[in-house]
Image 1 (cartoon, rainbow, N blue to C red):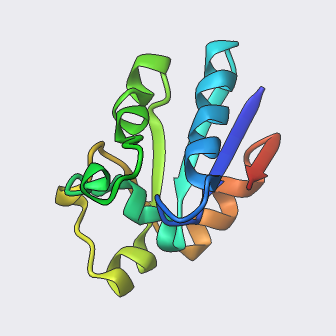
Image 2: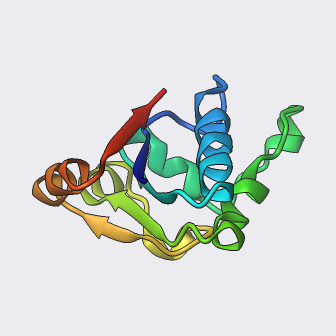
Length: 117
């Protein structure tokens, strides 16, 4: 089963990002072919310089660091969001492939199931 999880929310302020990551890990644990697309403010989930504990929040960056352990290697990042948010891929916790709007459309169409919380 080819699954794409779209994460377009910032890492903190709601539970959508960590829940999306939990879903990706659960699907991958059951041999699903999982890809993740970080778009819009979702790209900020990938930033390595997050300090949630300083704000009394739970740190879920370990989930992102653990994606490879679950064989989730297809990580895609919205190129235009990186540009508008002034985010560089060198700042990410994990490597991802930058994709433009056209590539995102193709990516979505190439998956059997697409989830966005």
